[in-house]
Amino acid sequence: MQNAAVERPHAERSASQLPMLLMCPGYRPKKSADRVHWVTAQGTRGHEALDTGNSDSLESGFEERMVAQCEAYAHQFVELGSTVVNEFRVETTEGRWGYCDRLIVNSDGTAHLLDWKFVRAKEVADAEVNLQGKDYVVGILTDPRFLAIDRLHVHFVMPRFGNVTRTSKPFSREDVPSLRLEILAILSRARKTDSKRFRGASLTPHADVCKYCGAAGNCVALRRVADAVGRKYDPEGYGTKPQIPQETHASFVKDPQARAQLQELAGLMEAWAASVRHHNLTAALESADNVPAGYVIDWAQGKRRVTSAEGLLLCANEYGLQAQDLIDAASLSWTKVEQTIRDRAPRGEKANLVTSFNQRLTELGAIERPEPTPKLVRARPAIA
Ligand code: SF4
Image (cartoon, rainbow, N blue to C red; front, side, top):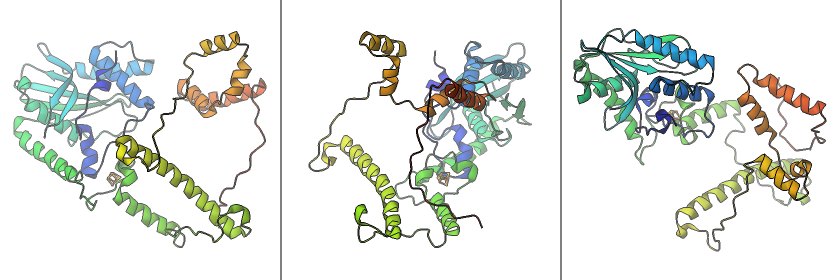
């Protein structure tokens, strides 16, 4: 079964994004990467175990210890007659919603909201000021399901470090209007950046935010920073246009300076050509009106992918081919092979295992490196 934490849809500008939006209203989360980071995967398994009480999906003693720590911490707030709710959706503010990890409601009107943080760095803001916690507090204290709650404590539990941050005094219903206003202020400023006419004047680059921002590639504020750095780094060369020599046919060019200009242009043309093809095809797929004049869309067959090495070998043998014939015909990505070894190796042994894998291949005579191939690269200036 897939974890609900993976499947569940998230509100636009979720509670966990609020701290980033406070730092810069233009922050956008990055699109999920194809490869799930191992810390994220541990967090997903940990959440699943805490949500379901089933630890089968945990992959190491360390993960089991992290989950046990969370349970032990939560247990101290459970009293006779407590209601415990795991992994539930709550409507927060401004038509948004979020998913709370655990709520313990005691019969005296006191409640404890617990959020599990399996993060690697100490990235969790103090519970007193934590905007994610405040967003959930608003949601819970305005939810008809939780009318019995008078006082709500918030706890962020970080089992990776054996750490917890919790509010020193509980939130009450009187706190809701000011909490709501705080969140509204952040969201209103952020929503202004959705407008097509927005020019980026109020964007505020911040090293800890921009590196996680999905808008960084097109961000005007970040470009201004990059421009300033570029000008300082290379005051003469930065921003100068590439030169086009008079003779552009490489076989006729003799002058090293003109050759260098062509070499620069060749790099630019590669990127430009790829960009033209990408944007023309994207536009053509959106509408037949965008197909470049004189062209049609050709749907090339997808590349075949081997799904069973045994099946391939069996079939190849039946047709008189050997494993070596297949290897000769295939192109093996050594980077991917090494990455697979790295992914499967225990922590702390990844690099060693890749090195020993390559040494073993060499010992067995299984690989050889061809002579180095020449290629022109820009000479780096000597360090003064
Ligand atoms: S990259 Fe731009 S939009 Fe994103 S956080 Fe940085 S300054 Fe804001």
